[in-house]
Image 1 (cartoon, rainbow, N blue to C red):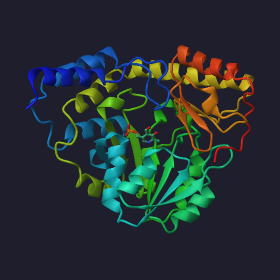
Image 2 (cartoon, protein in one colour; image 1 turned 45 degrees about the vertical axis):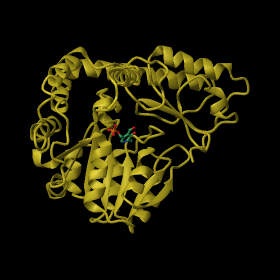
Image 3 (tube, rainbow, N blue to C red; image 1 turned 30 degrees about the vertical axis):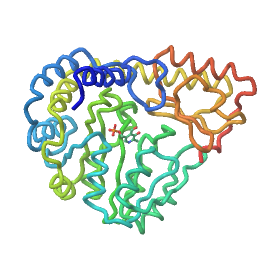
Amino acid sequence: MPSLAQASRAAVDALGALPNAIDPFALSLNENPFPPLPAVRAALIHAVDAANRYPEFLPESMRTMIARHIGVGAEQVVLGAGATGVVMQVLQAVTEPGDRIVLASPTFDGYPIFARIARLAPVSVPLDERGHHDFAAMAQAAAGARVVVVCRPHNPTGTLESIADVERFMTRIPADTIVLLDEAYIEFVAPDYRIDCPDLVRHFPNVVVLRTFSKAYGLAGLRIGYGFGSPQLTETLWSMQLPFGMDITSAVAVAASYNAEEQLQQRISRIVSERDYLRRRLSTMGVYSTDSHANFVYLPPASRPWREVFTGLLVRHYADGGVRITVGGRVATQAVLHAVNDSSACCVSGIGGVR
Ligand SMILES: Cc1ncc(COP(=O)(O)O)c(C=O)c1O
């Protein structure tokens, strides 16, 4: 049994291990730089007071709330511990060990991990030189695969395939291959470029659209994600919905976030303008970045390794020498620009290094 002193020491340590909500230089995980909105925070505190109670057995009310918000039937929505939880739920429901999963390369770091946990065989299809999916090659690979993943916007490049290209791609995918359309960053995309996903899943019953409260909604620590698709597909997924799997704060956080939509929109607009400013400034310095529609920018490998340029900043470096930088506030932007400016041999980055 730990002594009282040891026990309180552990509590202090645990509190000390919490990440800082405000950290201008945390630019590696595509988190939201803003802490929870006051109304969301107040609702969360209220919900914590009921932490001695279980949440709903299955998250029916959150399901209904989200379904109404996006314009689909409640039976079409499933929930998970972040989009991560939903992906694992889908893989568990529709795959057998040894099945193939088609992934762009590079892609969100999670996917190779999820594939490994589900014991799937990943088939990697390199992005093209501007960081876009090679849909022709992916469609070909999909012929022998159980699952295909398309991130729109893509991580790490932030690029966005056109609506027409995505629809054309879907027509080339076998009806029994599941397409995960990962829209983790969709709220950062201009409305004209968003796919009408409720309509998409009506036409393509093999598609699951993935969304999260971790990015634009700024609630990464709460682990709330959802997926939606055709009723026939989500019926199977919902049958595997974990009992008591979403914690007691999540429904409250979703409701409070939807209520605060206008304030959230202002934050999203700030992040988007900061991203555009950062890309413009980099461009005037001769630094190419891919056409990002998300809350990060991606710089392909350059003549000088980006690791030597961004020494004091927490950014995400890739094995091939590319780097992904989360968009923060102006202080973060200035730090990124200073780092580039200060690095002498910098940094004429051509395109063609995305792979
Ligand atoms: C493309 C993409 N999908 C899914 C996720 C997982 O998000 P969540 O926090 O909802 O699990 C991320 C996280 O970075 C991501 O970049």
